Length: 69
Image (cartoon, rainbow, N blue to C red):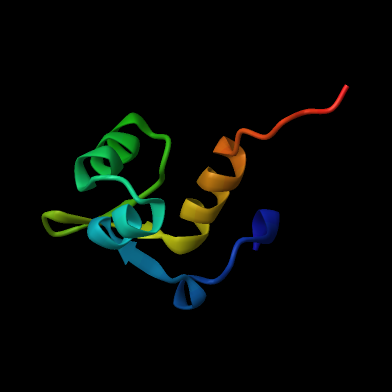
């Protein structure tokens, strides 16, 4: 696997509602993140599934911390 990716049978997928709960945002915010490409997702029928690891990476990258000089 390239880049340390997990095999698909090991990936945990979350629903939009679950992602919204984890991030403490609305489902609409999650849909916006998916449609803008900020949060990767796969389409299953009419709904989306987001890899759990992608949510953690997005939150880690978006973290605003106090930088020391």
